[in-house]
Amino acid sequence: MEINIADYTVKLDGNLLNLTKKEIEILWLLAGNPNRVFSRDNLLNSVWGYDYIGDPRTVDTHIKRLRAKLYLKDQTTWDIKTIWGVGYKFEVHYV
Image (cartoon, rainbow, N blue to C red; front, side, top):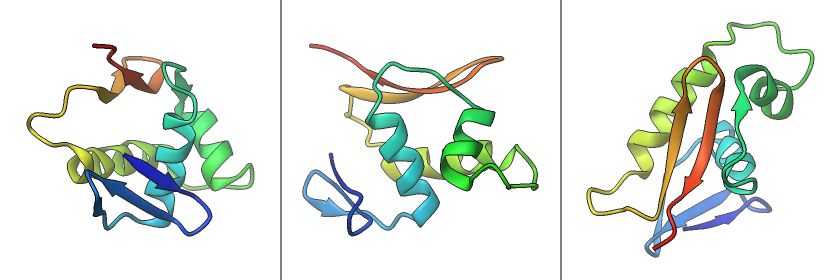
């Protein structure tokens, strides 16, 4: 996977993915900090900003859509994991 935050593009296996700006920003933050858990509040503050007053569950919706766009059936080297009661992390599986 290649994430280019400068031009807001993500390539997976050489294919350009159709991700929204927020999905790319979430992926950039999570993938740039592998195995670190981010709470919803951490993600809201980092991606949407401290002045965001909407529903914090928007993070869950964005993660769900991001997973649907990223996952390949045979992909086993990384995952976006839900840490119940805490948040999300980009988990790297070392082979």
